[in-house]
Image (cartoon, rainbow, N blue to C red; front, side):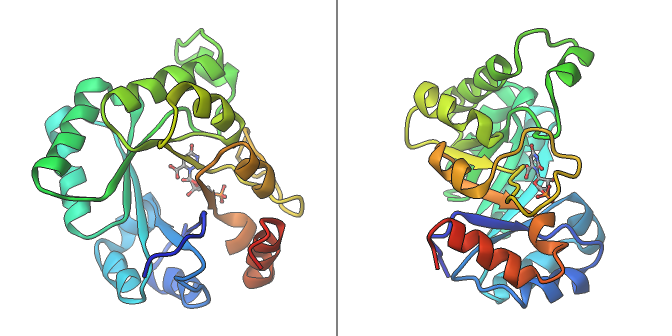
Length: 233
Ligand SMILES: O=C(O)c1cc(=O)[nH]c(=O)n1[C@@H]1O[C@H](COP(=O)(O)O)[C@@H](O)[C@H]1O
């Protein structure tokens, strides 16, 4: 079931049962869901089947980063399981991204392929630690342009960079933004954060939201507060 909601709920849970318990409170007409490293490592493809069976479009967030052939094969494997979106690290480089998108095209697979620019948990200091001495905004833009030139459908970035990428990468180019924090939520380990409404105003196409909903005392109330902030209820 396709939804026009920009909201993607991150199902960061340690077991299939816990993830499905949350999914069963959600409505596939009102959001998509994201399966990340912990849940997929524990439950494997069974979680994708279970979520697809409930009508959800799934973003499989495994952030592949390896040699081109390995990443292309992993992206193909994800797409053949019917996921709506899958991601790689843009820092894997042009040849890696081109191999991945070409593999999808050769097989007629329509899964969205996007690239992580700079993780939303990072600040300028963290980039300096790994030898990157340009500004964070500049590095995000460089990786986003590389993803676009490699033929990818969009990027993962922070909402703080979305308006800049709207200008430099043009449209249509997906800007999937984690680090979303409604005013009622704690930042946790996220550094580059923004509220849901500001993120949409800045040009985010999709908002990835985890703990502000999944760890709220009443997750549905938290989701509804976000929907009303976005004028969707
Ligand atoms: O690719 C991602 O989804 C991602 C990229 C990024 O730069 N930052 C980031 O937080 N994420 C994911 O987005 C989700 C954010 O969750 P919360 O911080 O709980 O809202 C987590 O599942 C992260 O793995």
